[in-house]
Length: 229
Figure 1 (cartoon, helix red, strand yellow):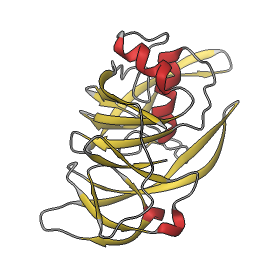
Figure 2 (cartoon, one colour):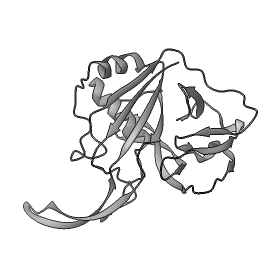
Figure 3 (cartoon, rainbow, N blue to C red):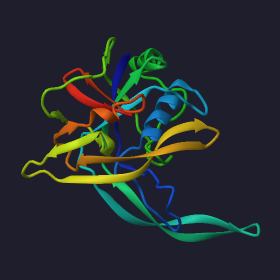
Figure 4 (cartoon, one colour):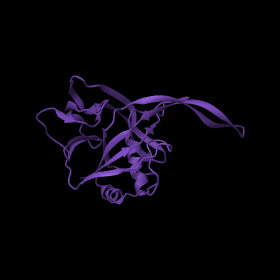
């Protein structure tokens, strides 16, 4: 498979958890479906679905704040201001590893030309971002064997972790309930949980080989070990 690497950065982001109502909570970092949605926006493909995979690296600490906002609501035809608490990701900065055999070349061409068909944003239209190309790799092979724990600066699906090596001055966190696959027509399938280092530092873990499937893989992309999902 091939891989293209690009960065996403903004002042704020909001990746709304679907299980929240009056208080709109966010995932602490970009979700798999949001990252693939950005690829679809760049290419101009509506209702974008793909078997390509992505990996996510945090380039800035994962931090959130709660903000009171006045949202416009409607009731029997009249409008009103509705106070709403929205949780926001502060200073989001991600490196996206996009790998596969379907859209990598097209995505690389658009990124290298600095263009996108539709606006790109981090979860909400008020969080605009401009993808910045970092690298392209023509040949990427999934890792099949390893003799010692792997070290990565990317987020790691919990299903892939057989054993973790905890290091001092690391802030490990777990984030759950991400949607894994978008099937089209606003339908999602399966969920995925992650372990990540809050400041973007490396995680050392021994993978569970039984969980390496078509859905979850590990690959060496450039100088980074990347969990792909």
